[in-house]
Image 1 (cartoon, rainbow, N blue to C red):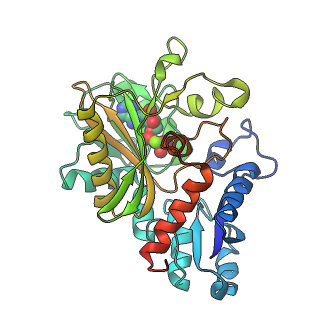
Image 2: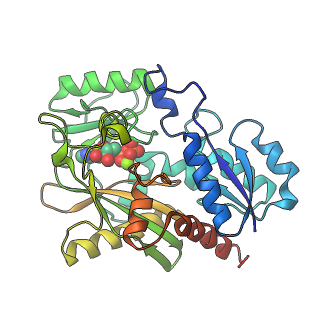
Image 3: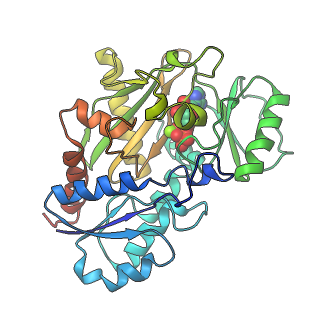
Length: 342
Ligand SMILES: Nc1ncnc2c1ncn2[C@@H]1O[C@H](COP(=O)(O)OP(=O)(O)O)[C@@H](O)[C@H]1O
Ligand SMILES: [Mg+2]
């Protein structure tokens, strides 16, 4: 098949020290882009490389007769709240099949509150929360501290700093203002879940959903006094190949059958009710009582080909005996099947 691989690459001068590094956190380094391209080719496909920017629509339009499927790995064309919907919308307009959710759902997935509202409607558990639209919003008295404050429409732990957990109203207001200054309103505050954290990768559609082995984050390796969450610092600054936090995660997670079944069912329901397609990764954390609560769903999920770089879905695939190439091939085939192309 002829696959248009649409991606975002980090700017050439990118460094974690640059002022707007957080905005580019989800864009990929050239090695990742190249690695995914090679994985698509290893499945016998021809690849058209398309960087996601304002010219992408034209590129896709000019090549539409030569494209069987867009492998949508892009985060954005420009930095807007609906940025993950940009490329799916191009593909919709041009009637080119593409991987992952349709634009509406891609937009919802990026909006943590909208997801929580949908899941809540279907009775799926998520932490109690409040979405703040401004500094003067009245705080819901039913919320119980500690709370965690995070941008509503970011990913990759952007804005979830080591200081994200707040103990009282004063700290809450400070943190809301800090996050809003960087990412804008609205800002999400939700009850802090003190339990274990898991992420579950899922591939498929409809009744044909498959989960990969469950991964658990190991926060006990974080330094004393550090908040036990996958914060921006934990994910990006304290953990890269040159400064590896050993055993950052365990996959398959060491959990009993009952919890495993609960997590798998919750993941499948989270995926289906929100209307996701083909592939994704669901983040889940346990509350005080040990009950799993949904945090968010990611699609596209991170795919780092380098086994020395921590990357949840490829790790889960390896735990299932699946190579990186096989994982990429499976995502593509899932979408091709959905379109009746194979
Ligand atoms: N309610 C919560 N309780 C405890 N930790 C949380 C909560 N929400 C988020 N976190 C922590 O912050 C990390 C990032 O939050 P998440 O909602 O997954 O956003 P994203 O991954 O899109 O940045 C999570 O992996 C988790 O460690
Ligand atoms: Mg997450």
